[in-house]
Length: 114
Length: 117
Image 1: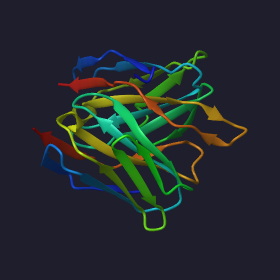
Image 2 (image 1 turned 45 degrees about the horizontal axis):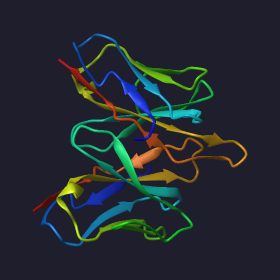
Image 3 (image 1 turned 135 degrees about the vertical axis):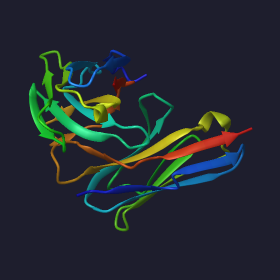
Image 4 (image 1 turned 60 degrees about the vertical axis):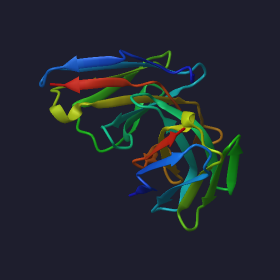
């Protein structure tokens, strides 16, 4: 069974810092990996999707890397801003499944203070 | 905005009651997945519907059931509500392509917050 772990569970930093959020998964046979942002009590906003054949994806100040063989992904946030405060979720889709089912971690709760 | 809508936004029910949650897919999407997110947890897969049939289920009891309609909108029904059913219920739509043999990226709705008292 696929297990997804995210470290740290919570992070509080001053504005302007560069951040690294970590995600690990137990079964490396994945189809893709996706990073989401979730504001309190809200739905999920997709940030980046990395296919299993890719090593990284970039969008603005966000960069996500994938090392499938070691079962790890990192989300790098450059020059953090208070508006980045949210919970960041990592999810993987298993390669063997025809369902498109996503397995989620518990998330990293990020607070960026001015 | 993803184009996926859910109703209602919030709901309060009593233990033992039944509830129906609704989801409208993004235009062009034919697959709907439902997830349950308890407070402080990551979303957990409930089930998925493709072409109006259940296409896989997570570790949830039969009192969780669903429907998908010809217009690809969907309902999640929960019978005999328990206190632990209190959670945010998320719907995600995607466009499956049989020729490519895969399910494309899922787009999530804003969720329905269910409180069972």
